[in-house]
Length: 339
Image (cartoon, rainbow, N blue to C red):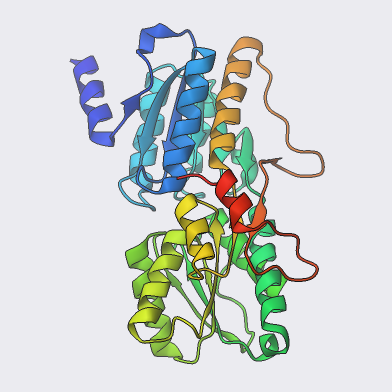
């Protein structure tokens, strides 16, 4: 009866199996925010391929939408019950998930945060991620240099992720401000800034529809808005759609973070001015390797020298390079993109 309940729970959570559970001695779990965002699709692809290569049995779980922490909590419970050796998680609620992560670690599992650090970061055994603060700084610097003297009178809007302000959201947001020359005040919090150039913040849930609605809301606040920072490229595309609907698409500079193939294409087409490209396949593949190594030897992964996490890299992608900001063009970005 217990097995039947667990099996039903796995189906309800949308879990998929990369290999039969009994096919390997080492079992691992991948828990992402959604299974539709191309970023997490590529993350799953990287984890699945590496698990197959190393003979690791992988189960993949995802929230129904970005921000669905309840499904992630249930997934952690399933991973513990299944006897997994480790969990890779891109957390939707970086604070709320901590008690569940603690329970997994107390049960002997290695827990690695992917892309989004937990709060506190040491609630996980390790973090494999883009330097999200740097990703934000790069697009902020690019936007400032692109605008030139007009940057001091800019009207800036922020299309963020969710009201819970997960660390990835805060880091990109505050990084952009630093790069653009805006004092972020408390660097661990969104919305406490007092720079007159900021029109406002709205949330998008990281998708096109959310980006479109958030852009519409900011336009109502100030129709003279001319710079938009977006949490990711789907939100950026939604923002562009809202601007195009009112004939403002050529008046607003949009920057973003992700570097997926659709996003790089949007940069090439002029929808997005520049984006910071990250590498989710590498994050997940390295995470599976770390779990296998931990299972075999008990050794935990170490952070990149000089940082508190393992840095999986970031590159600014634009076809309009500016002085002082290192970038790659969309041709190279396409060679490295995902999704």
